[in-house]
Image 1 (cartoon, rainbow, N blue to C red):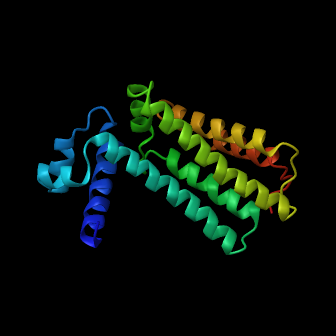
Image 2: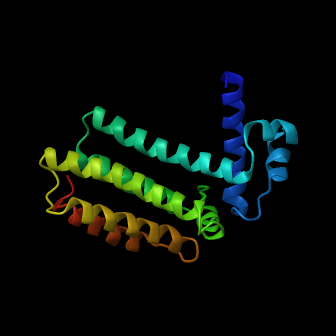
Length: 196
């Protein structure tokens, strides 16, 4: 696909993200995406066969952005603690109701498709999260900043804790006090005693 096609797909994903963030996965239709994007049905279907394909491309793009962000921090030789703090700040922004996110849409998608692509997608997201966080933890250990004996167990615990925060934040306010406590616990789990 040429630059124009890539540009159109990016436009579709951005518009669809806004719709999924506002209405969730189940309420958004391809017609909604057509209308908001300004594309004809033929124009939209030339790039995506259904909203599931649009949604999965959005998730892949978000995962790539996360991995790229961590890789850039490591290449800049930031401390592992700084990178972890950046990761936690990103989570805090994700929990902020004023910043659009697709957390509810993701859970709706997975429940709607739980015996197929939904379970597969959630598992792939978990695996990608493990890859990203394990890379950070290994980096922190190699720099002498993180001190833990079972990185995989800690990474899994952090990921499930973060997903729990995301889901809970959709129905209950997560106060700064709660976040500070959770983030302090995460830092302790990787062996940071004092935040540098």
